[in-house]
Structures are given as C-alpha cells and as structure tokens.
View (spheres, rainbow, N blue to C red):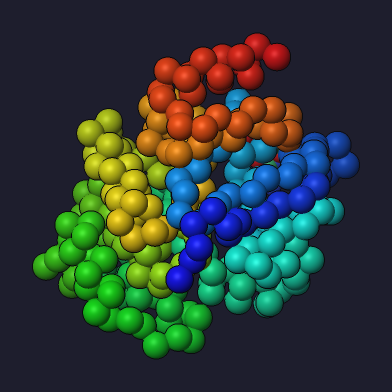
Length: 243
Ligand SMILES: Nc1ncnc2c1ncn2[C@@H]1O[C@H](COP(=O)(O)OP(=O)(O)OP(=O)(O)O)[C@@H](O)[C@H]1O
C-alpha cells in the first residue's frame, strides 16, 4: 500500500547529453508523489521525452540520481535496469506499442510474464472491464480502433500493478473525443486505483486533467503548476516559449 504524498520517482541533478553538444537534461531535480497525476510540458526539444526515459529506466542519465520506488536506478546497467523497470513501471505510448501477433489478453499479461511473475488474472479481467474491453480478450490489436488499442495499452500498464505509469503523448494519435475517454481513464486510475502517472504532453487541455504540470525549457525545469486548468497551462506554455 502506497502512502499518498511520498515520492515514487525522485530525480536529483539529472543530466543527459546526446553527442558532444546536445544537453537534453541539464541538472533536473523533481519528485513525483504517490497517487498523483503529473504532466510534463515544454517546447519541442526541451527534454520531455528524455526526462520520462531517464525517470523510467528506459535510458541512463550521465550524472545525477534517479530513485524509482526507493531504488536507485540511475547507475544500474542492463539487465538489472530492465528488471527494475519491468517490476516497477507501466508504459502507455502514443503509438500503443502492442504486439500484433498476440491477443488482447496476452498483450495485457505480457509484462508480468516477461518479469517472471505469475499473472494476476482476476485483476487483469477487472482492469479490462474498467477500460471497457470485456469480451474483446481474444481479439488481435488489428481488429481494434485506435482508442481501443490505447485502452489495451492502459490495461497492460495497470495489470501488473506498477508503482508508476509513464505515458508519452498517450492521446497524440487519437481524435479529440477518443483522447478524452483515455484521459478520463487515466484520471480514474489515479482517483479510484491509487495509480501514479507521469505524462508527457504538448497539449494544455490534456495537461488540464493532471494534478500538476512541470514545464521544461532547454533541459531545465522552469515552472511548476499545481491544479492546472487548460487556460493556466496554456498561459504558462506561452510564457515558457517566450523566454
Ligand atoms: N537519441 C538521441 N540522440 C541524439 N539526440 C537526441 C536523442 N534523443 C533526444 N535528443 C535531443 O535531445 C533534445 C531533447 O529531446 P527530447 O526528445 O527529450 O525533447 P522533447 O521535449 O520530448 O521534444 P518533442 O516535444 O519534440 O518530442 C533534443 O535536442 C533532441 O534532438
């Protein structure tokens, strides 16, 4: 049981440079609290995806610390990093990243099978019901709409009861109303299931669903907005872009 308010992800002085000159993250320190829905915004190239990747253990920082559910992962190498990531994090990507050759059910259970843990089938069924996909377990992703595929991805992320869910532009490929349905499900996951979410978005309306928005510019955190509305998030983005 997580205690609300404690940090699930905690980055301290994280830097990441690509090549010899591109400093994607420049001394980022930020913590994301348990049971909270966080958005990360910023201009293109400001380091949003790099922040998410370093926080999730998809990439390693050059320096600084990354604590994921209390475990220092910033310095871990493969395969320990992959193990930590599989154990602790769920992912929702813009492009769904489902396995086309597997059924909905097998996609949802795949992370647990890869982690070598016995899948919690009753919970997976419950999660599929919550995202409105009961009865579609035997379908292949190709038989589903974009919104339904993203629901599968969300079910897959939640089925392993991860400590945190990372979402990278989760509504980026969806039309407005389908995107809203996905955001409502993310919100429900936080409010009803106690999930913790960190979501990269460029859209102030999407960020308005979160409890907090962290703004990046040139690899640094330049603003931190609590209880955002789309209007407040848009105004802050304008201010960040005009810097
Ligand atoms: N694998 C990589 N190799 C080289 N440079 C990279 C790599 N990944 C990111 N970068 C560079 O690091 C900087 C930050 O990139 P990042 O993708 O984190 O930004 P972003 O804010 O997510 O951008 P966008 O909104 O356009 O997706 C950019 O200058 C980008 O070109």
